[in-house]
Image (cartoon, rainbow, N blue to C red; front, side, top):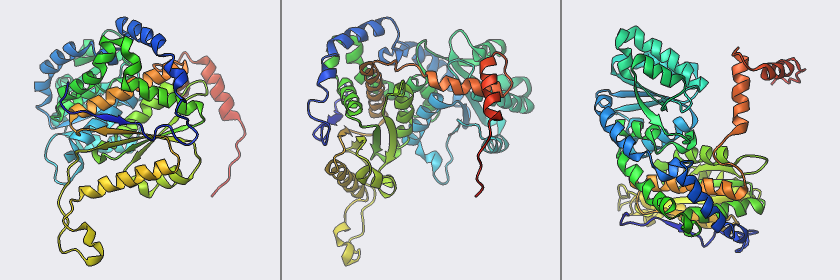
Length: 449
């Protein structure tokens, strides 16, 4: 275990109309869910938690990493869970790419269907110096495959038969179109373990390959995750005392007392993109059957000057996870000769402003009756980030169990995918084709502006 300790702070968690005993009902489910945890970890249904893939991942990364590091650019083809974790990790631990005069390796993540941006990247990137990482667990994600087809042609045009040496796929070990491509063209590949859904996959090859390419300590990320997961995997009977279960009980109580939104307020600026990663994890896992709380990512101090007014004085329907770290860089100090009206800043480090703003916002939220759990990280290194990610993944699953829904599927999302496929002319979607025809034939009510 690490020598430093991260903490959850609960003094303002049960406030306003959320009484102190609000989580009592879910606490009684602890023993039952502990048995479920024991069964699902043993049966391989929760690989993100057991991290049973770790040894194989370590060996695969050792084999593939030297070739990866011979390139200066990595173009990631992936969407949703295949992109959000990698982006959060890059912005947290390799932020130089986003600053001026960057000369190191760069990561480009094509996580949307934007023809203009995609074309600009393919125009500016040098094929011979670009490694392409194509990520899809199923091997059939239409947006990712569309990008794959175009990038494959782009590499072929520049490199001929050598194109396959600059393509790595991360996909299912045995099935799917990308696995077929890997077998046919002898592409380098890494596996997404069975039962590991996209939004739970950042701490697998999906996030670790981009991290390793950028020189980030990916092993530390996994070690931090293991610190949190190990007690759950090895001693599931102690589920009730684990911080992830405490968070789940609180989150479930929020929903039961008509709090419909969950703010993820991040006061570790370089970790801000973890808010977007968490939003997908929480929303796609728990928004089912009319249930769930809407995740709202916010960044301190930026969003104090935008959405915080709504948090403080809007509808009383919000809880808050408030993320800070007690050991962030202070930066340069203010000059001792500042004007008299700013004398109270003299000699203080720039980072003291962040600490003061965080404290003020936290107090304002609790004064406004927002139930708030503080998450204070002992440091902001990769190991700490891995611990936070595992804590939130586990809390998400346990919240789903308390809600009596499946936190590992996403049935509603699939409808939009089927309709899109039908619109593009794919076969096998007769119901969706009929629904599309009816939708497009309906009269429209348009108002110009």
